[in-house]
Length: 366
Picture 1 (cartoon, rainbow, N blue to C red):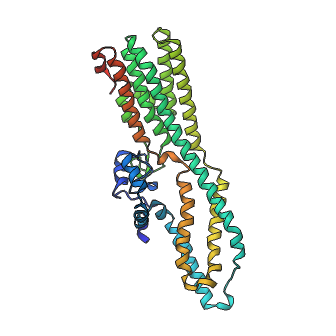
Picture 2 (cartoon, rainbow, N blue to C red):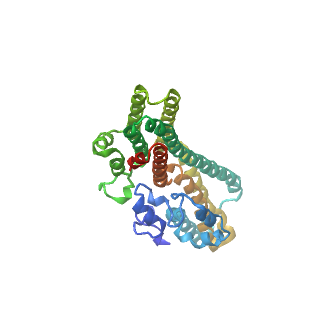
Picture 3 (tube, helix red, strand yellow):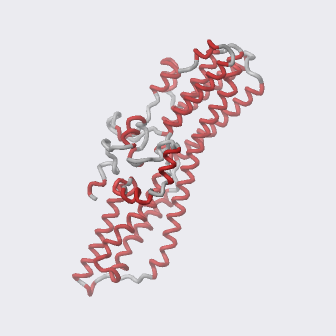
């Protein structure tokens, strides 16, 4: 059990499986919060869903409990409380006249309230997780809508260069939002992999070129900078008369929606649940668990530590699940979503170009 954790909440840079693959492909993921098997940090396909729904999940999940990210993270405190229950037992055996005892009624009264605290905590965290996924998915959807409207209009008017710039700005936008949401943890070495910092510079160079990249990376809010550039491209296209009024209105509405989605992502990323609620839940749970040995000892004697250990793992694990998903962007599959967005935008551009002249498709964005 003592090997269940490392110096950084169970993070092991040499860990096998999905975690090691994701470490190479997506350094912005918080590796301490993802499992070494199938993880929410991947986009599920039908094979993943088949494994997820398999009736074998009961035995598979039980046999892999030693590799559980949640269990590893709560192991220290679970062992500490279990050791405390053993100390209570030793004291009660050596000095039975002074053995502390507690009636079971207070814990019976408290149990439903502890359960309610945990349920509300995890439900609120999942609501944030689900909203974060919807917001980033909404950003990708609005980028596709803008390309759907603007690419054919600009290409029909012979504005191939402007059409490519718009497509490239939208491709870069996804990576810019991802990097903003994964700004990384503070480390003395900027190359420390445990900082989990996302650097979009290489992606900016692919889409924007060195000159524009130099301008964008200097901005504190890079997604807003890219949206401003996109807005200017739209204004220039309207002024040149190559975009119809309804097309301009549709794209402008999409840009407004993008800014609103970005604001929602910032809100989740920078504002946790009320800290007093989180602290109260943690304190209440710990006091409840520390009180249990005084009640259980008179009934279970030396079996008390054996019972306390799984109780601690389960209850602390529930609270830990809520904490892990409270800030969703460090574990959501943002990089695969950006790759998917890039492929879709390129496909939309190529299809729009192919309807005009075969030679136009050769100028598609990288």
